[in-house]
Length: 114
Image (tube, rainbow, N blue to C red):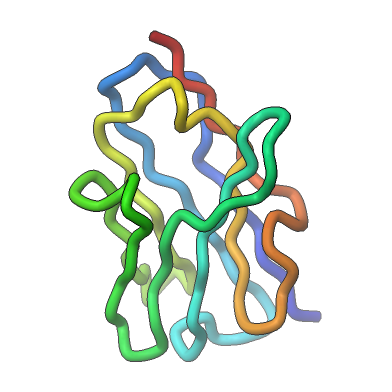
C-alpha cells in the first residue's frame, strides 16, 4: 500500500542543522506535491514548507533562508534540511501528500536546546 515514513529527527543544540527524510513506498513521490508540517509541543499543527510537483519548493516565513526542501529521486524520498535550528523549532515533524491529513502518522521528533 501507499505509505510515508518520516525520519532524521534528533536532539540538537541551537544553531545546528538536521536533515529530515520523507520516505515513500507504494507510489512514486517524484510525481507528488509534498508538504512538511510540524506540531510544537502543546500547539497546533503548522505548515513548514514543501515542494510542488514541478520541483519548486516553498517555505513559510519562519523558515525562509534556513530551510531547503529537495527531492531524493533515487531514494523515492523528499528531504527537509533545516539550518540554524532554534528552540522554537522543537516539535514533531510530518510530511504529507495530496489529501493526506497534516501532522498525521509516525512523524519524527526534533528537539532543539538552547
